[in-house]
Image 1 (tube, helix red, strand yellow):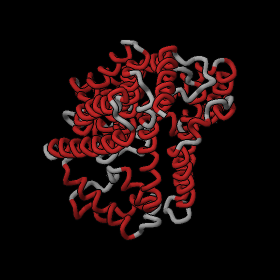
Image 2: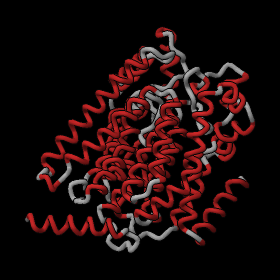
Image 3: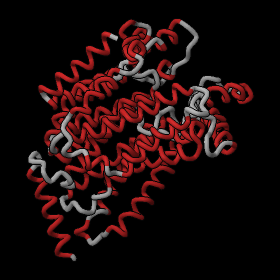
Image 4: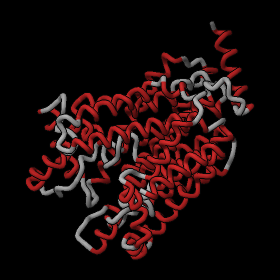
Length: 457
């Protein structure tokens, strides 16, 4: 209780003194997400700190609140409230609804306080420390398994990842991060989830490097790629290859000066996304078949989740229903009874039926669509490329979530990164006309695009 009050007071004081410092502290809390502290506070520290953001000034937030993905987030929260009526874990359903509202508020506050392209790049620079700590620890643990086990069993490890690390080292709990060939770094126990966070971070940092014409974010992005490789996640390695290629192609076909209009860009984008997803699936499948967590257990998980949705299309099993139904059939598949479905869409369907599944899909696709929607308006080739790479961040979360234990927003660690990607794209498109922090080259790009549009009418 005392720690919660301290965090709230610090949030209020910081917000009154320096809004950028408040945003930096908030983003660090999101990215690090100390599980050990959250257990003692009922909610994560970033939740309590985030709530103080309701007192910040509202000048720019309508850019976010009017979007499809933001309204879909509110719908997801509402569906979790409704699901409390039929969920075995009704209190957890309400807590999840509250958590989704906190995520929605994070997008609003980042939009309100982030500033222009240079300010976003500077903010990402301040956030590079926890990102690089995660990358460095992932690489180190990949080569030194003894150090990895020592960390998970230590008090410091308990602070960041909770008691599950100690239970895995000294007890019978099983975590992905201790497997041979896997590494999850300091802030995770699962290499697949760690790779997703580092992959999303890499796409955002690369977009910031291109938009701001700075080199250091590109170095951070490159190191994030190394971290993805060291995590041992096969899906992550596949996305590391596919999504940059997708971004480059997306930016190329959006070249309006070559006569490519929106009617061509949209279907080609859909084709690229489909081809990219199929490539990830095929590439990941071949590797998963060779790993200790093969594709076969996932098929069993997906089949069970699909059958649950088919039998209860409107309500699913409710929150906590999977944890009741799966252990009853896990033995017949020879799979551990504690595993989640490893597909956030199917998991959403088991919690709230098809309405929940569709709402969460709309959120993720909506974020990517918001990032890409104005790519044909931007004439400057560099800024167009930045938008394409920023859009790769939510696509990474979407594709990765089809085969691993992640959520529709990726993980709590990716929330500020996705928010910065959204605000970066909106800034490049000039959607904050009252913002005097917009960079001169971005303003010139937007002005040129508007002039070109007027000439073509």
